[in-house]
Image 1 (cartoon, one colour):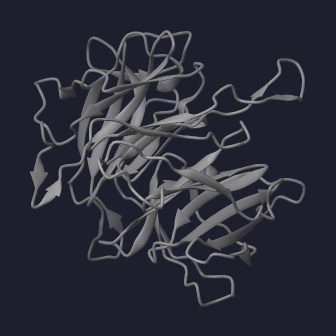
Image 2 (image 1 turned 60 degrees about the vertical axis):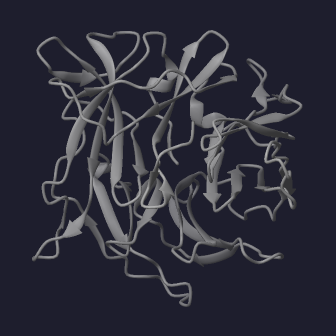
Length: 356
């Protein structure tokens, strides 16, 4: 059955990972635009794809780019030591959500197991970890029958901040330049670097001793002409903020005009639990895991002390500046709750979702 088209384009959906079966993870589709029942809940689809993997946090191995989702096998630490075991996979499978099936295989990357960052740009996937930087390129010639997709990995110049944890990253609206901010823990200082993915012999360039004001990934919102992400300030971590896009022509430290949303979009429960902010076309979807009590009260998902029924709390919203120049959703935000499979575990702590 062909996928539905909207204004000449394939309709996109939100895909969420759940570690809800004994051998690994399942990918389920959630229609965030669908009508909700009286409780404001939506049901995920049956599993459309399953990946064999150890039950670790899904961002360790799952990645998506274009219309494809792949399991990202990683090297594992030997228990009680600092040594590494090579990943067991000899090849990775590629699932295409548009074709609704497996479309090929490829060799696994040699990524570090500690928080690899996957950055999709067009039909390529860039993977940045503490000891490597590489790209998964699409095949140079497509299979004439469209049945097989055989990509290849290529090593890229190692980042000069490989010993420093990454605090935030974003892709410039030019569609080719990656911005990455990292912290030097020894000196408690920050620096931001760029990499131009369009150049065949590109090198990392230091933009200056400053940082992007986000926690993790930020996305470009063309309606605001700004980057948007979860605020990286420790005092404002449960807020959404936007900042002007940094010019690629200037080497000076930019005066980042950062504004935080006036609206309370996060769950009001106590604690600082991970959340995922996904750009879904012309708006955003903020995903958190909460537990709902019988009276509808939200409390944090805090295993092993779980009360109530775990749900993904999903807030969709768009952003604009009001007449005073403040960042606001202008009452566009809508809250839905996605019921999760009872067997789901670690994936609840750090929601992993893709829009495609």
